[in-house]
Structure formats: structure tokens, C-alpha cells
Image (cartoon, rainbow, N blue to C red; front, side, top):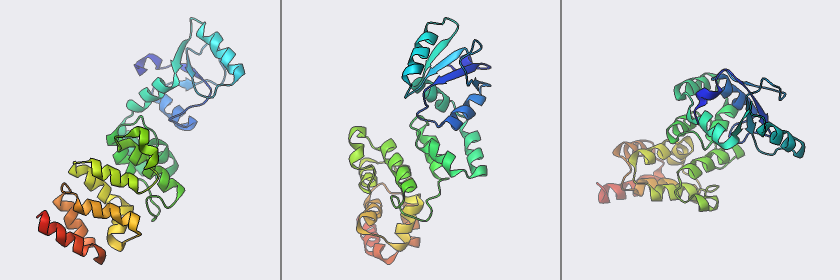
Length: 241
């Protein structure tokens, strides 16, 4: 979708947004000098068909679709276009300066942003000194991470809410940079330093055993590792080199 077509216009939203909350939806519209109208008047040129439209609004939407002066936009395509055309650097700077964790989580849960932007944004997330799944917010972020990168989306529900999700990601990947990213997550660094329960420790164990884990990450683990990892690190030196 070419967003230049909506510049300097007024739009009306029927129903609710999906990938963006309403506040963020309005913020992104401002990038194109677009105003979201509160009433469907003659000056509205674009109408967005959102989700959860009431029966009364269904009739109004149908009438608007017959009005040749108005263009109907479908929510999924419209939100996707808004997100795919984000100024990544501008967003990152804004979130760094504000440290608005609620706003950050809106984007981290958004499947329309690029993988590259997602990974940059996740570095700004505050894990609150807790594990990957130890509170509701961390669980949301961990499951979003697993869902985004797990190849078997249809069966991701079986693993994305547990440590098994990260185990699956490490099993699938051959990319050293991706393994390094997982190893740099604060909850993982805490497990490396302090140990943890068995299911969480298995993530670090798989990182250490993975043949494509970078020398830099292994060196960092060796430098900061809890004693429980010494034997496993020694085995890696023996078999991997």
C-alpha cells in the first residue's frame, strides 16, 4: 500500500485496531499529516474497516463503501503499511529517551515490524531482574520472540510459553549471531552467572554445546560462568576446540 495517497487527509476508523493500540495508531498517522476523525463527515476521504465493528456501524460502513468520495482501507493492510514504513532510527531514539516500556511492548508484540527492528527494540526491554517467563510481561516478550523466529508457526503454541521455545530456536539455528543474541539476553546472562532451575539451565547448556556458538560468546561465558558450567565448558574445549 502506498501511504503517500493518504497524506494530508482525514480518515475514520470503524471498530478497533489490532497490531497497534489506538494511541500508537494516531501517532503513526501524524507522520503523514493525517487526522483520525471522530465523526464520519464529508471531509473524511478514507475509511478504515477495523475489527469488532458493531452492527450499527456495519450499516454505516456499508453506506460509506457506496460513497464514491470515500476510499475503504482494510485494517490488516493499513497497519502493515504503517509499520513497514516506520523510521526505525527515529522510533529507537524516541523509546530510548522516554524509556516507555508500555509503548515498547506494543511494538515488540507487533508482527508487522521487521526482525531487525524487533531485535534492536528487545535490547531496550527491562526484564525487571527476573527470568524469561517469571512474570506476565516477560512471558509476553519471550513468547513473542519464540513465535517470531520459530519455523513451525502452527505448533508454536506448544512451546512459546516455556523454556522449550528457546531450546527449539537453538536446535533450528545455525547462525552464530542469533545464538549470540540469545546468549546476551539478560535472563540468560543471569543463568550463566548464577545458575537456575533445570529447565532454564538447559538453554545455556545447549548454547555451550552448539557447534556454531561464537568464540566470543564462549569466552564471555567462561569469564562470567557459575561453577556449574565449568565441566561442560571443558568438554567443549576438548571436542570443539
